[in-house]
Length: 434
Image (cartoon, rainbow, N blue to C red):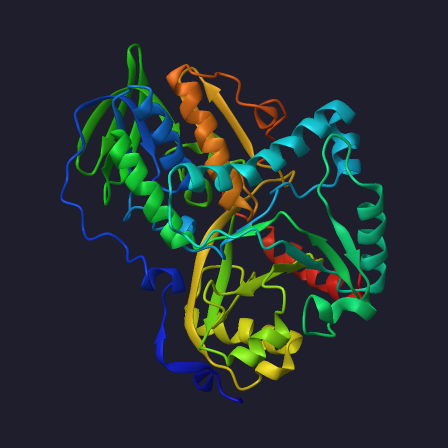
């Protein structure tokens, strides 16, 4: 393929693949109630898991969203569930000490199990599967590092991780682009569109009042609670939960100054012959690699397509432009796919933090969780449930991520002016294998 226009299938859609089976809800003409015990801003995984907890505790719960329910990254991600915590045990020990490092890593393990247990308990049909993750080393040096960490293990829990040297790599993945890797057997995959749809139904059944296309324009704290001004009316609330993550804006400037919005881009290929899929993806695992500018990919739940994501642009662009860039990287890894075309291309905004850790907290009945750093499928719901329980008074301990400093940079207000030089530096490091 020499022209970008040749990259697309005849039925190409500039929208998430997941929306085919789980279309976005129709325009919502509902107006919010004038009063509520809890107003939750954001109807993704964080907000809806919080709503399930508050509604089941008997609190009058209103969830509002500027777009259709789940319009953001909760239905735009790749459907990969990991332990979510990016810094290593040694890095966390250096920052916070051994005891706190172990608690953070245990929270990551708990978030991995949270989705599995919730899907099972609520009988949500969303193609959840504990397939494991293959994390590929893009240099020999990175493989040696991964193998050492795998041998050392983590105190406090067992991950079951094992190293796969390069000469045995084809048992996991049909490519020679990596120098081996590590398998984390308990990491999982899911259909995020169906998962969100099932979660939305659970929240509604619990009694939460969901109002889409209801942007919040102002949030004021008063002596008796909060005044939430939306495009569809004002709501008086005793408590507020901010659950906007990568879409956090000036409504909550303290959080906005602490998260870095970054575009993440994904494509789905057209259908691929079964024998090719079996050769390239024999284990059906979710996949990632050690690059700073990471790629993440997987077979679709029906094993007919490849879903491939990464950060190929510094700002939201036309998916017709980002799609060919992603396809070129997919073909670089798997030359057998050189004649494969794109059926879907889309983007979403993830929220990174300056310490690459998620954070949550509470300030006099204003609750938040944010900064999932591109690993929010498990952690967003896990921390959302914690927020809901805390707001309901069921369990006020928000855990390890509420006990670490949530730092920003001087003069940073939410516009990541430093991304361009940072991305250039990361690309150079990836090329040099650092």
